[in-house]
Image (tube, rainbow, N blue to C red; front, side, top):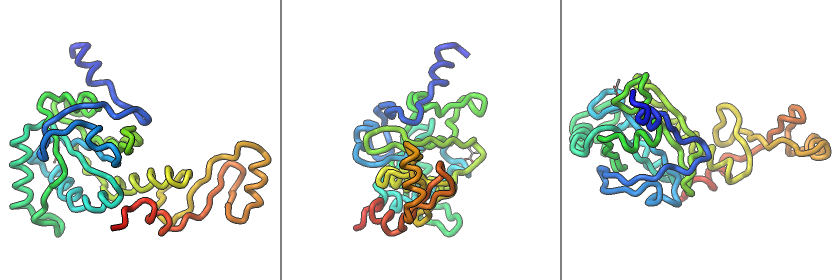
Length: 238
Ligand code: BEZ
């Protein structure tokens, strides 16, 4: 592979980076990313190709959950290396013809970016040539309201994503920000959260004596965080 192209493909944004900027055409009009979406959380995700089965199952699932993500102030933006007319035809076919796992008449209302030249896919490290050099892998970027990348998940072509997990990530990231905590393995709203390590022996001792804090040892302390408190803070109650 030509070295410049390889370098372009290999460059990947990382957690903590500002989301790379781009302008693109989508099924919902032009987009200037991420500035058009500032103030919202955003999931930017890629799929390998229109008119393919795993991607179809994913789009139906994501579109069905869109209002749940909207309640968490999170917008969805899809991308593949297909043209606009392919996107439009595929999404129309999904709405008119596909019934899957009880989902039917599914309308995809979030923007789907056309990226025939792979400009955006390359900027976001979505082309992983040893998997496929002409299709994007299933990348998921979680971007906060200030345009900072907060989490990244990649899946190969053959593996459909778990959208409950993507929703869990959005809620957990926001809970961590709002309450200044970390979330343990498999955390869900209502589960105990982790408080940061004690900065000194004094703080550690205070924590061990605090009845609200449960310290398994000096480095591993949790506290209760009520489910309603989390959801009231994170979800836009209409
Ligand atoms: C699919 O979405 O079904 C798919 C797309 C590309 C490669 C393999 C599967």
